[in-house]
Length: 399
Ligand SMILES: NC(=O)c1ccc[n+]([C@@H]2O[C@H](COP(=O)([O-])OP(=O)(O)OC[C@H]3O[C@@H](n4cnc5c(N)ncnc54)[C@H](O)[C@@H]3O)[C@@H](O)[C@H]2O)c1
Image (cartoon, rainbow, N blue to C red; front, side, top):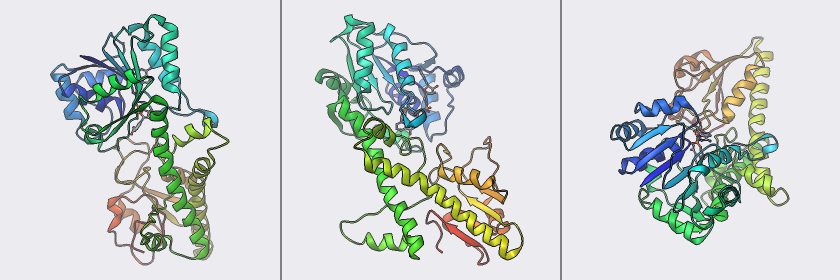
């Protein structure tokens, strides 16, 4: 069996390496030649635990080979980006380009799978495109959608153990895709149609966004009401049927902060709560920035000097280096424009990052105001001198 993976990024590369490690021939395709060359040397271009060893093994055993060109194959799996354009409209150009690259190589009996997070109807749209270009393949190939729900940092484990939702454009396609995933997934495989599978992925992330928005809204209300929101959430969650998430400085990353818009842009009249959650979570980061600015201005007035502010954490969530759509980074950038003396502390940052950071202890001793933005493990047990002003927006300190 030959499998082709289109797109060798955070999702495509681990998937390719995992399938290849099972002794299946995998042809990885990426439009970025540098990515292809790195992989063919048995190396990786992204940060993900356990991935380099797996890629090295698969390349050495000749089960994994990367290329910029598509070859004939039994299975084609698309894992290319799906960002949004202006006005939060999903940008399907990557999925469409990858599909167009595959079309000339398709033959009867092939299975075509999309894993990229996609608006409802994308799989049917790509199937239509395939059959328009190659009408002789109608009812001769299988087309399915299977969303990815891995947690960065745990991808190799979750790729194998998570349950998967698999939806074909018809029952035969669903069965063909189920048969394929059985080869490398230990989790349960749930059958549905492609539209439901597409919506399932979007709904999972919208659910998280809405629940975080509730906590973030509470945090702003409690601030006005002079109530400690973390204590309140702890107490309310003692109710047997209440479980409130933790507030933070907003919502970031390339999934939760993006995918809900795929529902809103398609169903603008009905997706009211989902849209409002996006607005609240985006507003929360502006609110945090304004809060810090007010405290800093007051310090300046009271003490007659510019305060030094340490922004504790820049990534979009604890204990990772990923800064895509990060509210913490946006807050830091907005404060930097205010000409305060600013320090950034990010223990997970890569050496070649463009953001210069200070060590935690040095920052704490030299700063007047400590702004906790991400609950990194390094911040949890800090002892903070009592003369420091602490603004904790992620509930990481004991104050
Ligand atoms: N990263 C995650 O944690 C995660 C989780 C769940 C779902 N997803 C979804 O999976 C999809 C892929 O995300 P990612 O994080 O792996 O993206 P990524 O940016 O890390 O990788 C995508 C790769 O595709 C390549 N590419 C672009 N167009 C191509 C084409 N026509 N042919 C071949 N390669 C092409 C790019 O060069 C890049 O290397 C997205 O839809 C994303 O929303 C990601």
